[in-house]
Structures are given as C-alpha cells and as structure tokens.
Length: 489
Image (tube, rainbow, N blue to C red; front, top):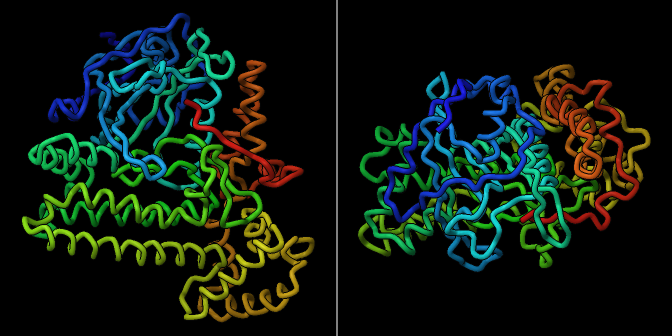
C-alpha cells in the first residue's frame, strides 16, 4: 500500500458483498508508466490533490504499480446480453481499486481500465491501447460538459509497453470514476449464477447506494421501486442522448448502469448529418444500436433487469410479471415526456401545445431529407440564422419556419427568454468525429497532446457559444460517410 497524501479516502463496500459477485485481484505492474493527463477539476471534487497525483507515487497508482492506502482491489463479475446473446462476463481488463469518499460524503468507484488480466479475461490480455483510452477521456468529459450523467476519467497513463491487436500499439491505463459499476448485467449474473439471497443482497446494496430514500417511499415492495427508479433514470438519460445526437454504439446489458450514468465508451460517436438510422460501430452490422433504436433498446435492457428481479418482486410468478410489465410500459411514456420536453426547449418553447410534437417531427423529417447537420441546425435556429441552411433548401421549410415563429411568439415567455432557453439547450460544440480523430492521431502518432487539450477546452462549456468554439463547429468534408468506430479491446 502507498500513502501518497493525495487525499485518498477509500471504503470497499462492494467487496463486502457475497464472494460470488467478484474476484480479488491486483493490477498487473507495467514497465515504464508516464502521466498523459490528469483531470484536475474532477480530482478536486473528489478531495484529491492534483500536484500529488502527478508525482511518481501518483503515476504508480494510476498505472497499477502501487495501491493507494485502503484499497482492496477486485474485478466485478457480471453477465450480459451482447447484441441479444447472453454470456457470462466480468471485468476482463479492469480492476476496482475501491470507493473514494469525498469531503461531501459522496461515494465514487475508482477503477483502472487496461490494468491486466483477471479471472474474467476469457483469453484476453487485459490491456488497453492509448487511443481508445484517450477517446473515452474526451467523450466522457464532453458528456459531462453537456450535462449528461456519465462516468468520468480521472487520468490516463502510458505503460511503456506495446500491446498487440492487428498491429503493435502503445499501451495505456485509464482511471475511471463512476457513481458505481452496478450494471443490468450484474443482476443478471446474480439471478443466473447466484442464490436468491445473493440477488436480494445485491438489490439491497443498490437501493442503499443509489436510492436510499426508497425505504420511506413505498412500503415493503422495495424491489419494485428499485426497478421503477432505474427505469426513470434510463428514460431521462436516453432522452438526453437523443437530444444531442449521441450514439452509444454498444448498448449491451452489461453496458447499462443502474445509476443512470452513461458507461463504457467504446464505439460511440455523435451524429453530424441527422439520420435516425445512423450507426458508427464497426460490429453493429444490423443496426441494432442505431440512433433511432436507442430508446427501444433501453426498454429491452430494462426487461432483462426485470426478469432478473422477478423472484424479489412477488412470490406469485404471474403477479411478479404483471408488476414488472407495468413499469416497462411506463418507461416508454416517461422517455417520450423527457424527449418532448427537451425538444421544446431546443425550439425555445417554454409552454406546451398539442401541436408541438407534429412541429418537431416535421423539422426532423426535413433535416433527414436534406442531410442537415443536427447540432448546427439547432444553433442556427437559436440565433435566427436561416440563410444558407441546408434545411432551407427543403420545399416545406418556409412554411414550417412561419408556423414555428408564430408558435414561439404566442407563448407568455418573451423572445429574449426563448433565445436564452435555446442557448441553454443547444450546444455550440460537440466532439465532432473528425476532431476527435485529429486529437487522437496527434497524441498517439506524434506524442502531441496539445490538440486534445484545445479540444477539451472547447468542449468544457458547450453552451457558451463563444468565438473560440466556432472552429469546432465546422463540418468535415463528408458528414458521417464511412466513419467507423471500434470497441478498442
């Protein structure tokens, strides 16, 4: 153990759960670790001291060569439906160091990703390449800036070792911070390979960690409330994804966090040209996780969670199924409510009218037909810049624009209020795919991290609409064309 005086304040509550749910394992040491980036604002919020984290002791911890005081490292077990097929899984290249208790009393998992083999590695080397780890750092910080619940990245270190995929690549370890790493797949694992008592203990743990208010909320059926709470958080989360054009890319049940955070940034990306069928993942050849399918996949994943929880919902199987189905049916309604409220805000509508959804759907249909850029179109509407919009080429745009302006002017909110609402709801910048690739190429191929730093600065306050952000709103020459992302394993 290493006491770095960095401010580590660990507890290990997950390690007190039944042994079946995890394996005790230490990170594998690396040859020559070096700090690439430390997330200083995140460190401060965790009660950590960035200058100590950047020291040789801090570097050793981020690389897995040393453990912070109080750490009890484990790899978590879980199952998961991967593209619809159920498998026994687990942390194959990640180690949970423990849970940092912040000065405010909050609890966050501290996990090393790319830290070597575990009992769940299934033949893999347990390592990670620098490019995908930097990609997760960039995208997760962009999501945080957008106000979307997400795991975050505390640090990335290079290992001084090569890893081998199709070619030799520089190795790296990412330190991930999460409200927890409890997944739908964690409950699937407990239901499939554990006892009912273990499943109940896991559910009680999830309630205490994420929904402590449940005990006083709805009597004895605590596990039904757990399912309902998770469904509500997923409805809100996926609506936020849709509102900014984010495509997760691999919405397997092991990549769906109970906390309602976005987790596991593999083949994810943001749309340029609006198209509900957009897929970026190289392995999603059937479009299962396309942009337009994400809300329904959220429902599918929640159904798998409900199946795992059935023994806890009611002693009568039929009644348990009925209770679960009621929650699942309500999920789609709640998703739609969140999405519709968000779309109204993007159009500066502070109240509700029955025709609003038709107005929104007509806009999206025109955007898809004209291949209009999703983000920049809403920015143009925010500032009433209609000339030169690809959308303006659509034969129905002028009539739509008149209806929208009349609708916006009919509400009680002033025009200035409407513009302010739109500014808060429509980001000036997103992590454009070509900009992310530019930053990764400079870092991985040339050791130049300045491109990434500038990109991160632009993404930190996406609703600022500042002059410095303009260059990051420029589109690539070919929007979305042939762009593919990979899991980075």
